[in-house]
Image (tube, rainbow, N blue to C red):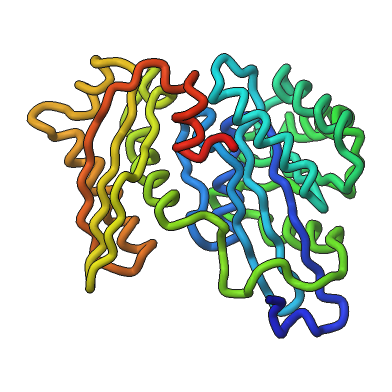
Length: 305
C-alpha cells in the first residue's frame, strides 16, 4: 500500500544498489542512512552473503537500498551464489552507487567490478569514495581521478564520505534522490527492511562470531535458526552454528563453553532490541563438512534461491 506521502507532487522513490569489492563499507553506509542495523558489519571481507534491502522514508522520498555481497573471485558454491546475488541487484536498481575504499588507488578487484557495471548497466551511477578519513591529503586528487576514469564518471557524480562517522552521507543521499524516478513509495513508510526477524537474528549471531574470530573460521561459519517460539513477554530462539571442521567447533565452544556463552550474550542483547522483547537464546555448534559447496544447505540458509 502506498503511503499518504506519495500523493505529494514530485515524490521520488526507487531501488538503489550498493556495489563494490569486499570490505569497503557498503553495510556501514546502509545502516547509517537507514538508522537501523539491517546488514551486519565486521572487518572481515565477505561479511554480507546475500542481498539485503534497507529502506529509508521521508515526506519527500523513499529509497530502498540493496546491500550486496562484495564482488570477488568465487572459490565455492557460496561464493558463486554471492556474486549472483550482486549481479541480480543490477536488474532491480533505479540507481547504482559504486562504493569504493577511497583511501586506496583502484585495484584489480575494482577493475573487475567496473567491468561488470559497464557490461550490464544502463542506469544512473554515482561514486561513493568511502573511508576518506584514512586518505592522505596528497592522494585525494590522484585516487579520485583514477576512480572517475575507471567508471566513466565526472566530478558531479562523486561524493567523498566517512560512513562510520556519517560524514557527507546526507549529501550522498541528496544526490541519490535527485536521480530517482518520480513515483509512489515502494514500501509502507514504517518498514526499514525486507529481512525477517528470524534471518536478522541469525545474522546478529554470525556477526559476533566474525568479530571475535580470525583466519579461516569467519568464512567457514553460518548460523541457522531452528526454533522460534514467541511466548508472552519472551521469545525462545534455538540456533545452530555450522562450521566445516572439528577444530573450528572447539574454537567456537571455547574452554568450558566460554566462547559460545560470550557470543550468545552479546547477540541476545541486540536481538532483544530487534524484537522488542526478552529473548532466551540457545546455541549449538555443528560440524557440516564443506557446507559452502552444498546447494541444499545454501538454500536453507537463504544464501541462494
